[in-house]
Image (cartoon, rainbow, N blue to C red; front, side):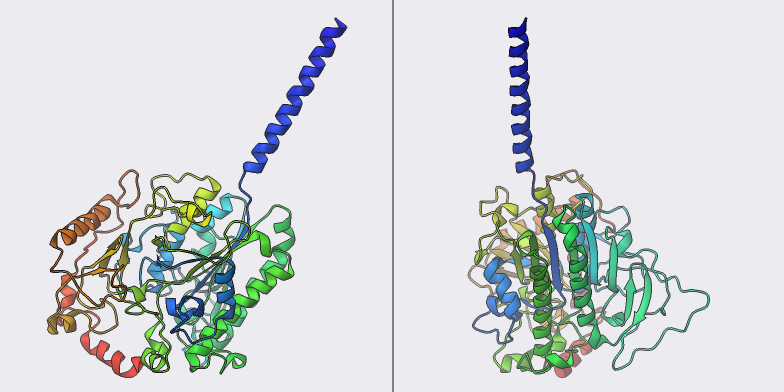
Length: 522
């Protein structure tokens, strides 16, 4: 009997030891939850980062260069649109922007939110994983203003301030803290950046030259405050959409002259300096090794940068790519995309994998082993294996581009088809002027052989054109471009918009483009 008891005791100990070892192994295989900071510059083309444009990038960006040196550069990364609001929608939802009611241009304040209340965002994804979630900076996705009955009149914009349509004390009932973020400190869009919102209320008004320093200080403050919790199992996600170097081009006094090529270059240099302050805060708090830092931009460089003047000085904001903000050409939407993740990403590496910033959603979901339902992130592919240094089993092979005027392009592997003449944005030629020059209504480029989109081979590959149009039509009809149950777009989608090729029907107006060419580009 004693021998049996002894045997049973040993058996029980063995089982407990086995269970403990199994539990340890399971804990080791659980994903570590690093802090994540996503820095999203505003209107900063691929060529503004010196590390990405060594021959033709003359503006100093030492901090972003250091990120590239310590992380992975994605050379073929694209925003879903070449302007602000739609590209931000796609990043935060993993869904193409043109599936929404916003078929062209951008939102201003006082509008219904573009992200519906029931749609999952990056904020929700991280919060569900136990993260604190903060948005510090530019929202630009719509919210309303509940102005108090007793309130000051809204102020008019001045040379130093750009106010919202509502005064201090105004409540924001459906802003970022209702879309997955625990806290919000920032503004709606550049035209209202002086009106600073904290969570759901306009709390102060500041000169626009102070906006970038103020936002940067808030990011640093939050890192300092959250550091101890982060070390004890409560990681943070900070989405930092900067206001720079978007217009108004307003470098702080201490940055004037630092870029070497005029005001815009100074603002780019200050944008880089903001990145440096974030990195210093992580280092000071001992969080460098357990924090993912991502740097990207919402679209290409804006025309107010005086692009031709920069080019005369030897600086090319879009590097070797054609076009700029608002355009279908790659300069409009191919953006810097740098991912630093110590211990996971090998320093100084590069990926040429085609990605869209919609893919950030699926990539983090894959890391957390989260399965989306069919109504979430319909256009998001994971590129997690590329980050981890392995081959992607099902890589993205195509992406749909969208311009400020709502014109479409589709990229499939090395081929790119534009369903529009000219830039389809703001660069010349565009729309009716392109038609007047005798250019065809569509363009086809081999991006492997012609990354600068100079040689239109539309007449040489009719079968390719037909196949790519059918693919685009199928993605529109299915309401998704990833595998899954078909979904509905929010509105009917016209992929051709041929009415914009007519001078009479072009809502932007040819004369407006001519003024831009004469007054801004030079």
